[in-house]
View (cartoon, rainbow, N blue to C red):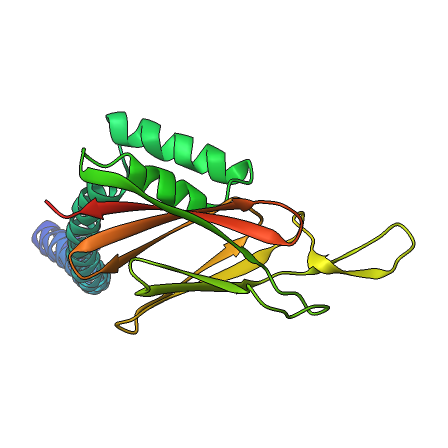
Length: 241
């Protein structure tokens, strides 16, 4: 009877089905794990894609900004080049070089030393190319002051077509008393008036120089201190070429 209870075939089937069930369960577990892993991978991939897309957007914006900056820098560089060329052209036009630079330095030095600009201009005019100039007249007149206005206070040149008058500062003696005659150490003012209405004025400490053009002639005047109260005016007449 005990042998009747033992059924090898039945036990074999159970073992086979148990193996099949275990295999199926293992496959199911593997499939579920694979599904979870795949889902996790998909989510990670989505996250990476979103991150990369964000980076691409940021890089695109940065590229656009850099492109704008490049355009601005290029425009600024072109503007700077134009300004540089204009500055160099202006420098070449306005800054003397060579002989002109030497003359400009000498003029600047003489002005710095206190030479009167009008006198320097007169000397420069005198250095003009040779012209047909002749000695004119030499006359003197009393230079009026605030303390004295009398006769002989003017002279005329060029056949009475140019009148010369002036005014000076009265001198003071050692006692502080005002005198009638002008002080040659102080600035004086000498006026020139042509018959045609032209006027010119020389101001400063004597000697002074002044030029006037009347008709087709140029009159050059030099003014120096003469006897007390007097100023001597000497003319030179130059014809235009």
